Image (cartoon, rainbow, N blue to C red; front, side, top):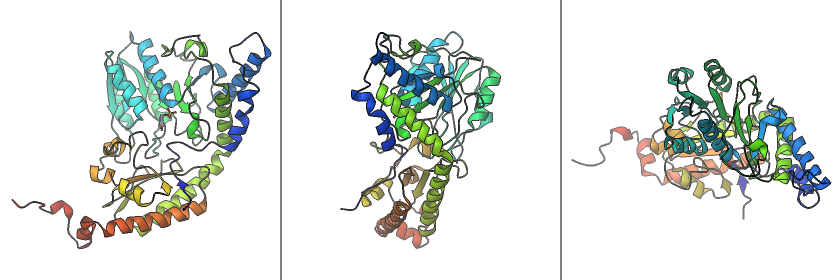
Length: 404
Ligand SMILES: Cc1ncc(COP(=O)(O)O)c(C=O)c1O
């Protein structure tokens, strides 16, 4: 059997062995409850949580007490948006977000409409970028929160977060960003970028699954949240529940590794990605890259192969793990709403593949993927009557498919 190649690092990443090594002592040896104040088992666990929290907060220019541990970015997005909405509902009932956000943001906003909130969804241009003018024009005296993701999980597009932050600060509106895909790849400073709330998750950066966090600004302004989970008052009352010490330690280690290697790794990944992109574009006609080319994550390549179905292509090369849309929605056959929002026709959305390169992607793997994708697309197109018609010079848009 051929070796499988993992190229779906936007969905999740393998854990770095160094992260596992850092976590191991916190399962059976240093196993205390970080809230136990009366003995050394608790103190040791608390110490590990404290130093992890410091490291993670510092990595985004925040203070230790501004970081709340959660179960991942889904929970962080829920807590940020619902927590702000419920806390500030007397001030206003309007929230602005973007049509291409992750479902953890979109569905949270949708749920809030049942509590009387009104949501404005900003559109995106053909490259997947928001318009700052549209944002400014959407703000009303009832707007309490703007939520704009930092980097998109499907097309890797990086939004102008600093500019969004400046607009929000100027208007006195809280600004949340879902930075799940950006962490470890883009340098973030919450003060410089005027971010008030920021969601992240460890499993996208070679850390464990089921742990993430939310940055909540404590000064200028002090952001308050209505909690979603009630109980023992952990995390300063914002998120009750016994802390997952091994995962917290792993999360911090993952952040440390990502930050230490960020610039060389970004360089390495963009070189590999560009090689993959060029080879596929050169060898395969009727192909397009989706997302703003000069504002993308270094490991992202989202590409549509006309006259080939993404699902079919994935089946033709089962040893290559990629995605034909967001991992969260690819179990349904709906075209990707992110690509649709960019004005890409449904048929081309269905033809799109997301390659997500990561820390363990090698140059040899890129060569193998190039070879496999080219041969599979050619094979599928040889079976496609539509592609044959195009080669014969027929414009499919002008074909009268049924006789009247
Ligand atoms: C942009 C973005 N936000 C949120 C999430 C959800 O993260 P988690 O799996 O940690 O809940 C993901 C993961 O798919 C994501 O890519």
